[in-house]
Image (tube, rainbow, N blue to C red; front, top):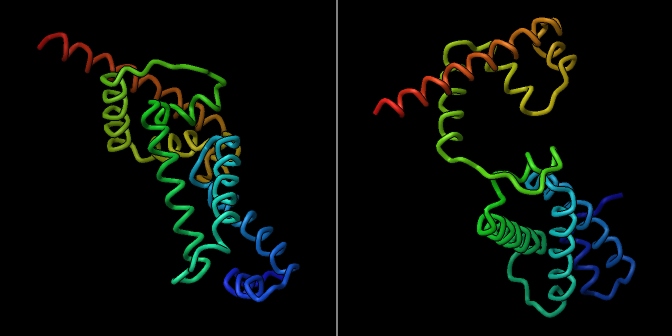
Length: 184
């Protein structure tokens, strides 16, 4: 049975050793779930959870907590997450992190102008054809063609056709954007 972390914390402060073990198990599991949704890289997520747990274990007995224990833990989580993103941004890896971890790349050079053109072309394609937008969105999220087909009630062949046409439209749009910039 899961107890509220604030109740467990109060039991720990009153000397219950079993409650301390349950408190940290419950915190660890909750933080893993929270961090998993914010950090794409599994190793970084695990490392971040451990950092948060270290701070909590070092400070929870020494610190006088004026808010609820759960709120205090969430504040630590938010601060660690912000510093994680700040560090990643400084290293210039934040934008490429998900792509790199999936593709196994160690370093990718990012052409910001090309990235801007790609985003603008995607917006243009999605404005002109909503079916393309839906399929591209699910494809980007990593759904298989069978899953996309089930969600949108279309065949695999139609999905492949949409992806092919969207890819061709992207190519044309990017080429037009390049030609427009070269003509300026």
